[in-house]
Length: 135
Image (cartoon, rainbow, N blue to C red; front, side, top):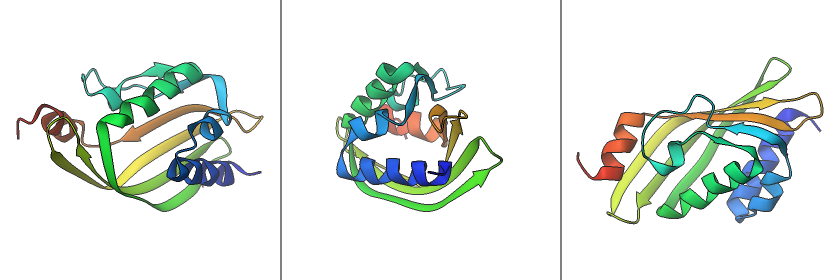
């Protein structure tokens, strides 16, 4: 299976709510949200290992998803995949609606085809303002 196919399978699993299927594709020492910001927004935190990735997915419970559309999944060299996603959510604690067009997801892979790193690129300041309802 190619790395692109692995990423596509993980998005399909996310759509079904099948987090265990996603975790099975991760290296046990995966770096989640590589170089993450120092923000206190729960889904923007750096995490490590499968337990850290699980904590990320648990943090998404603070969001109601209205749209999660993957518009592109492309290989970047032998060990990375880049995805573009359009995402709309509501932060359930404050009712703030958030929209990200062309949110970038970067996936790193090892030689065994397991994910060793993940990072999503978003407007972190906007995410922080919506999370804290300051905008």
